[in-house]
Length: 184
Image 1 (tube, one colour):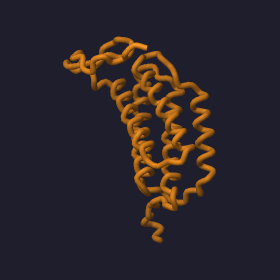
Image 2 (cartoon, one colour):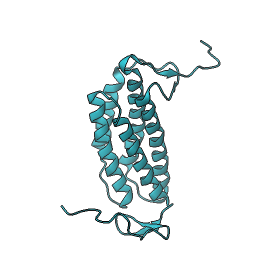
Image 3 (tube, helix red, strand yellow):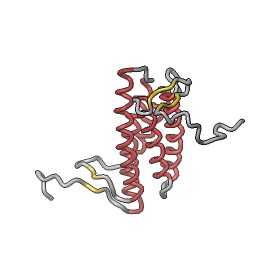
Image 4 (cartoon, helix red, strand yellow):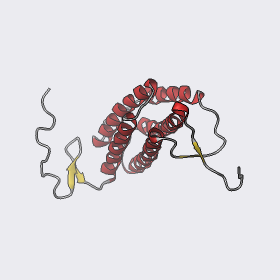
C-alpha cells in the first residue's frame, strides 16, 4: 500500500476551502465539514476514554466504535458513500441492552463525573449528541445515510450507559443530581 499522506501540508486550503473525498471543494466552515470535523472530535474523545483503565468488554466495544466513527466520517466526506448499515445499529442495540442489564434503574438524573474515565465518557456523549444534531441538519440540505443518524443516536445512549458503568467500577459511585423539589 502506498503512502496516504506523503506531505502533511498542501497549501490548497489556505483560501478557506477544502476538498471533500470526491474532489469537490467546499468552504471549511460548511455544515458538511463541521459534521465530520465533530465526528473526528468524538473519535478523539473515545480515544481519551480508551486511554483509561477499562474492563475488556467495554474496551473492545469502544475500539469497534472508533472504526465505525471513522467510516461514518468517510460517509460525510464523500457525498453518496455509505458504510454504516442497519446491522451496525442492531449490534449496538444488542451491546447496549447487555450493558444496561447490569445497572440499577435510574431514579434521578446523573451528573457528569464519578471518575476520570466516566467523566471523559460523558464528554464523548455530549459531543456525540452534537454530531447527531449536525448530521440531522446536514440531512435537511443533502443526502445523509439514515442508518448513520440512527447509529449516532444509539451511540450517545451507549456512551451514557458506559459512563454509568465506568463511574461504578472499582467501587465508585455515580454522581446524582439533587432535585431541589425532592431534598434528600
